[in-house]
Image 1 (cartoon, one colour):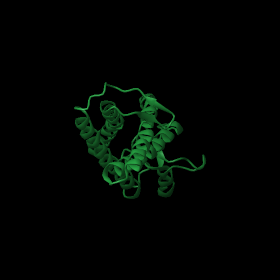
Image 2 (spheres, rainbow, N blue to C red):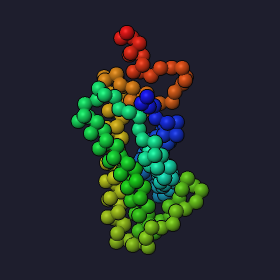
Image 3 (cartoon, rainbow, N blue to C red):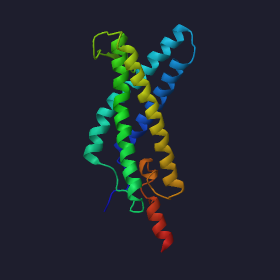
Image 4 (cartoon, rainbow, N blue to C red):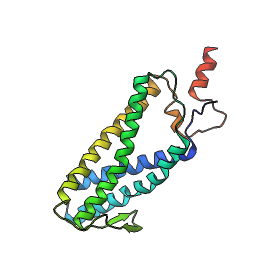
Length: 194
């Protein structure tokens, strides 16, 4: 029988990363776009880095888990073009999830700034201090930040479309199961139609 639910570990990693990425993005946007007193801006940048660097460790668990366990079987009702777009969207999301913190790490290294992880310890610099490269790496980091924002919005909109318009159980497959006895959406449809 085909698996219709993500594993508990996959769900935990998915939602942990969603919270970390959205929080880090908001802190980064706040610290880089608003005119703040220097101390508040410095603190908000350190908060952004402390949160954002956690994604590297979550990814170190999430990518191998996904490669080993895969995803639940897709509904047969989903058109092949939509399935292909979903695969491409997920691939681009994973690329951005890796590239965004790495580009920030490189930017901080080039600028000679510390890179904290959850306020517990610091990552070593990826390169020697190179102020000339700092503006280029900053622009790369910002580009990945906007790319991931677009991809996350697209991901959420498609999940809602599948759930509310297509009546698919794809969103439910990523939500925690409240009761082992509850049938999934597809099972409910089968019972109603018989």
